[in-house]
Image (cartoon, rainbow, N blue to C red):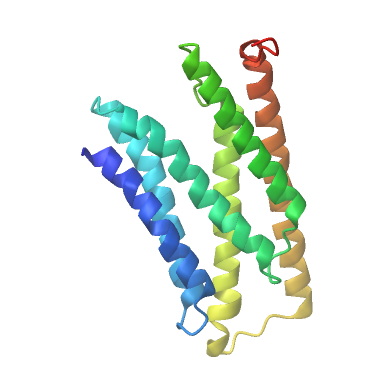
Length: 197
């Protein structure tokens, strides 16, 4: 197994550890640890593709696992946020984002069956980058709020409200970018969808 595939596999392996520390309140600084794990996993996402393309190490295994690893990592974080009362993320953005991922995956399968490669477009890359930034920002806030309260940091109600608004705005921007990128993919590959087949 080459290095890019190892990095991709590492990203998948890190997901259960991320989830473990998000829920492991008995562990000191569990949110900070989860934050570090998520950032580390995100770095592998940035590295594996670049290394694979630069050194001609692109494989079918990597083509299959890389997008799957990305989706599992992001959806795991967003699913946790829906469940957490401390994060203002409702089920609607989560459902929209999940539906888009299923749709694009389906399009990729249809395209592969027709011998067409669905490359990541500008809107898809922007959606992914912004969603990652949103998740990292929320995890960082949880770390400061939950993990560092033992240092006597006292956040005012105004600060809480401000963060709630900012996190909600970030989540809805991510959702909007998700919808736009999904529509772009759908428009670009609509010809592959034949209701008579």
